Length: 154
Image (cartoon, rainbow, N blue to C red):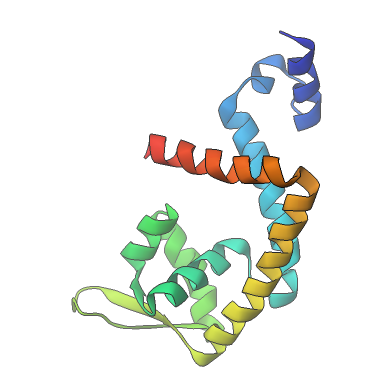
């Protein structure tokens, strides 16, 4: 193991050489740190990043089935139900019959559209903060590389 590997193990908090070289461990560690940054930024809205992602998909589509949202975000159905229920309870999202009567569609309410706009501004602040902390080149490469990893493994 090189000195760089030892530094990375300490940087990630692993302290274990095998984990320092583990793509999964490092990806999960980075994901937690990045999610924490975005959740802190979104905190004034009362919405977490996972919920904002659902609001953003619904807003982009005007209406979307749970299956469509889950597929687009890479979520399983139980996670979708658990994540959308508070949005429905808060009156941000409502469920209605879709084109296919067997599938329900989610739509944003007027409050949901307002909340999505509020969240988008806070999300943009998080994007700027992460870009500033990482530097523009690393940020752009990170977003691109993570997309490549996801496409390769799905």
